[in-house]
Length: 250
Image 1: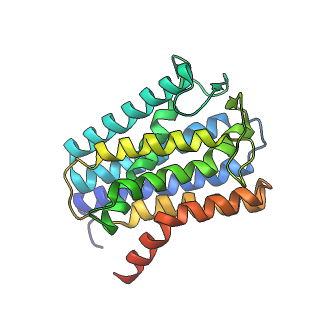
Image 2 (image 1 turned 90 degrees about the vertical axis):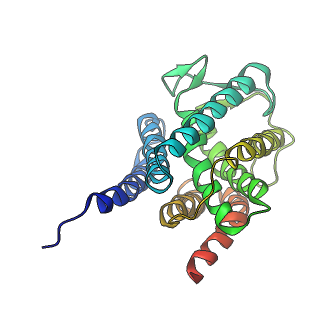
């Protein structure tokens, strides 16, 4: 029987967290609507753990810590700005369902920025040098095509004004996605200053791919939102499809 080296154990950690996050998200669909708050938080925590453990395993402790502080700190600041001033997303309010909260912003929300910013950055870097920032920003923004309708449907936050809306995604103002794109561009511009090096792409591709394909399936089959499945699927394909094809050809 072959002993497993410490290096192999470290390499397995992100896969374990990623698998657990996917199982938790499948569980989310099976839990009755209105009782999903705990599972929602668990999904974000496990997904963020998968992203950060992969960053630690591939790039080292310092890189992972800087990424975590920048992404979560930015997520908190932009959500506080949006929550208190309606800029840049438009007027919305968080409800009391997701707790704990920091000045009215659920703690898991900044972690959600962290969890998805990582695979977006890594996959965009694997595809291009010149267009990393816009490509990663589009990947992060189009994920919200799935996220916002799902979370609004659960009652986690409420939009005061929903028009004009993005075609195919009713109930979510177009300004929200403009704000997401602006915020994502700024975040990726900062994150892309972190040292760049080759890394294993399996975990980031699994995380992004699951959110992409899983979002299509969930909205088309379980949530009765076929138009969201279509628009979100096409949007996330801008980053997801070339990343998948590039990985397949390696």
